Image 1: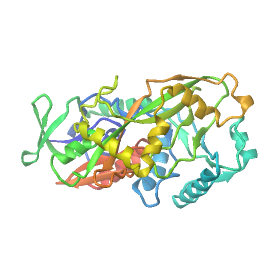
Image 2 (image 1 turned 90 degrees about the vertical axis):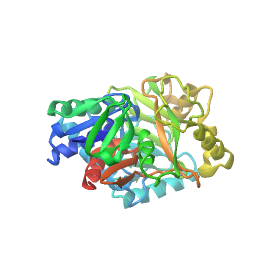
Image 3 (image 1 turned 60 degrees about the horizontal axis):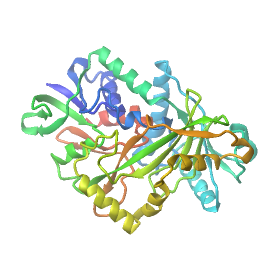
Image 4 (image 1 turned 180 degrees about the vertical axis):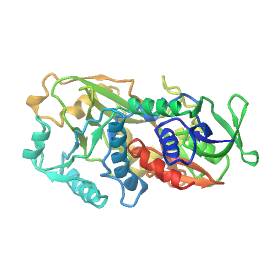
Length: 397
């Protein structure tokens, strides 16, 4: 019987790497399952590739504890494997009095989390990003960086495969606990000694099939849309708005990529339909409740959901991206600034919510059931935190 990891995304691959690195398992005793692709072509490869510095997360949350150490570990791993990292930093730019107050709160929070940050004035900020619009102050995060998600995923996958880890492209239908075996989607069985469930949106469904602990949770998917700058001013650092703390989204930002282009987005659109071209929602089984949850959140405006929905829905996303991009820049620096949509980066973010309160679950969430680990929620910054999160999870076994 082998140790099984369900999910070949960045979390699953990082856990496999950690188990081998710590000499807890030999590679030939490890199997990684994924229903859709080996390695995963899901959220792990469809994101803006920002290595987060841990500014926003509540002190003592798992995100706060793991994102900073995870960022260091990911940079070290990329350097050791000759993969590029762009150490470009990040500027948070406030545009009104409310955002100035939020900026100070984020600064205090970041200091509590042990982040390297400072508040700077325009003279310092414009040296970092020429052509920047003049504001009273900015928050500078020098440790924020940019990576290429697909390069990391595929490098990690190839290294594990070369070591002898077995990869199987099949999905788990049922955990037959009494016999310690999975029923797979081709009606075959796979025996296991122990397993870790990190199947992304499918993790919750697998966990619910063996425990009622998370029956109060549901998935609310959001479509992340992206654009890419085709011409104009050279963007040298991440340019972010000051986020609304009542929403789990950071707003539309500009991210300089390693290939010298600039990624713009995401536009986090609530999903009301199951037939969005290019996306498979079969792993999210309870789709009727998603529609109901969206409508309830919209009507009740819990967590300012209506404000978010109105701000995200648009008939012209490219125009919205342009408007949100040029606000960071002075009038004379936006000449020839143009944007095209980049559907290769589009992705689905499976946001967890509580059914009774309709509150968003914003921290990493896991549960140990019968000596097996279920990672129920591993949203951003899961990629940044991947190696630290993997060590944390492995320590629970």
